[in-house]
Length: 453
Image 1 (cartoon, rainbow, N blue to C red):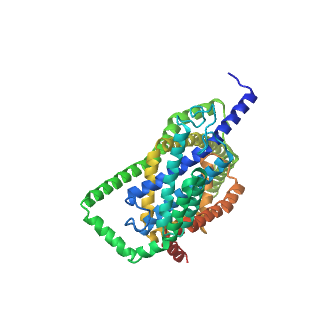
Image 2: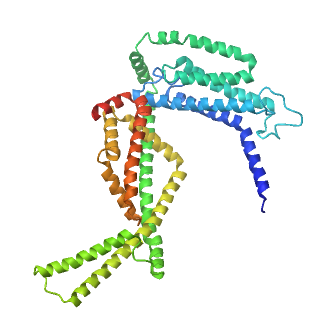
Image 3: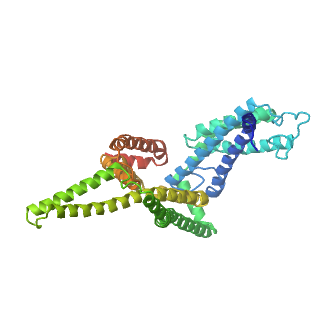
């Protein structure tokens, strides 16, 4: 059934309005999920305690990784709580927390109804806000990282402002409690710092080793690591072998026969681009000069003009078959590569769990490297792709790619690419080193600078 443009426009406006009205619930739910993710890291790796040096016996790189994850989730909470507050300030919803439902409007008819009345929805919102509040308060009280404290404080301000809109009677107690806890922060740190952190870490490790369940935990962690390694390696092989096999099978048994049939049937041009034509002419001219040279130096008997023309004609037919095959092969490569990319994308879409496991495995491998190894890998990678000799490599890659796909070699495009892309890539590398690596592994950055000098 065809709908008029006006009806479609009205339907689009209604959908946009519905999406905008759901913004508070969606933002709160995303902030709540981020808080749950922080809680999951605490329970799994820090025994339910806060993410800090005191709660787990981890090395500097591993702890830096957990702190970066913490900052990421805290940033999500901060952003979503800002969105939550802003959207609620612009929307006057019947189910707004603390508001009375209007007559004739029940939860079943509300866009966000979910089968809950206003009172139940308000309780659910309060519970989520209190849970988020508890996660944030923990890091205001316990965090030692100066990079985390400002972010946590800003998130806490957003949550407190939300609670001030929805819970005026309890806000004063929460704010006073947080002020008292923030004021006692330095005192708590002083009490913890009476003993060196290395000594506390040693005592924590000894306690874990004396635990009767420690052996089972070690075996469990080893088995989990083994399973993760096997799944990751198998998935890497899958990502490599499946597209390659798909490319060869489709090229030889599906795309190849179809392309050969249509090009022969339609009497397609012999050369797919001008570069191949010029290359064939140069090779034929070189063959003719070769025959003449051999005759002049006496290495071959003198040939009449008819015999010379016959040999040149045979060579021309040979070159025609060779370059026709190369032109057909370029067309086959285009379609076979597209099918391979579709197979690769299909693997990524249908194996999301394996992707997460592979990401965790790669994180373990990268963070497990020593500082000198990290610096060596970075220098090797940057010198190959953005170093002094990299333009020659990029030129060879682009020329090979253009020949593989049957495209003419556009020298201006190649030079423009070489003049811009490595520069952009080098800037991205430097930003990554400054923004992320300098925070997670500063000693690796120092080693990298020393090796570069």
